[in-house]
Length: 190
Length: 190
DNA sequence: ATAGAGTCGGAACGTGCGCCCCGTTTGTCT
DNA sequence: AGACAAACGGGGCGCACGTTCCGACTCTAT
Image (cartoon, rainbow over all chains, first blue to last red; front, side):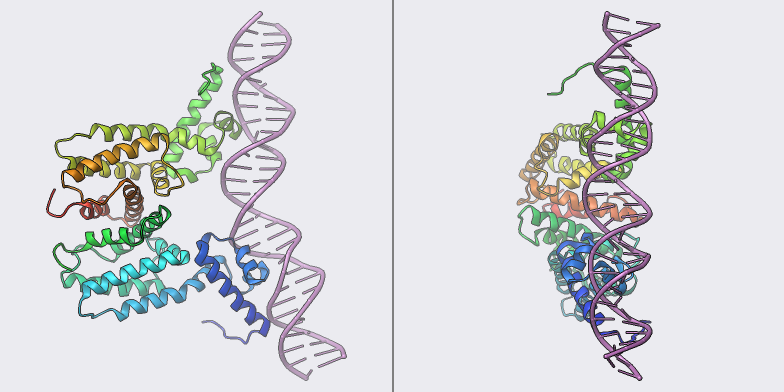
């Protein structure tokens, strides 16, 4: 796939700087941050960014890839838990919490709300693992039946919208998430 | 306020055409529709639009004003209902349903989710009336306590996000709204 | 009919962005 | 050290959009 031709030393250093700056910039301002600002933060020219990444979107995906991968692993680590309902809810809350600290993650997850992104690659991993957690929680009777992974994506994008607006209105974090989780719970169980 | 100086006949006709075209264009594509397309739909030049409305945003507000006013009236008509819980839920569902048919309404209501818009004017009317419905439903025990009008704005923007994504994924309308309403209900009551 | 104020249309301007080009610089290999 | 390819950077292109400008064109009052 990726030809690991040995890069020149300065090229490798600049590539790392770009990735670092892009991670910070995307995290702060999301996909809407101008590419020129990423270049400025990295201390390089815009041309250098494009030498290493074909498009701005490719850079974004390179930046978000690791975090999504880690989230997918976290989800897998929670499978086969003693209390599947808690595991599912913990993971959902964790995803939302992290997205509130990282606008790039927020944008990536909200993009998963529309079917334009077919959830390929790492995105697919997250949703596969999340789907497993959901199934276990449903089988345990903790989460109502009739919810599938597409609903999860839709619900998550809604939750992110709400939490973002709640924060803008100086409301405590997690309240909207709690309300949503209440709606997903099979009434009367944990 | 508005000086009702008698406009020239062609000016009045063009103003009406612009409003009509803007209503259709904003409804179809939301605030993001280019002003040039509104002018094109109206069969006038961009300069003519700006003669009648100082900015694109002013045109948008002129267009959305009537619909918001009508929604506020609908809300007031539902106050003092025999079943306040049903009245509240019916109104919330109606707002969401109409917003799904009108992207301009959607944009206007989602903008109310952030505190940047202080809900002045007609927006204020809607939220005042909605707040009354909420209070009655809560006093009747149909909606859980601890929810206020700010929460409503946040919840509505989240619900609109979810319904939009649900539609994009060919999911039946209203399901996400139902889930949200479930969360708002005091468990065990209608 | 005619003057002149009001109106029109759309070319043009300013801005911001993603992306590309190319003269210049820098690392690396002999 | 010298030569060559690789990499740099930032000016510039193309595009989209909101907004403004101004010469041409009506409508209306006399």
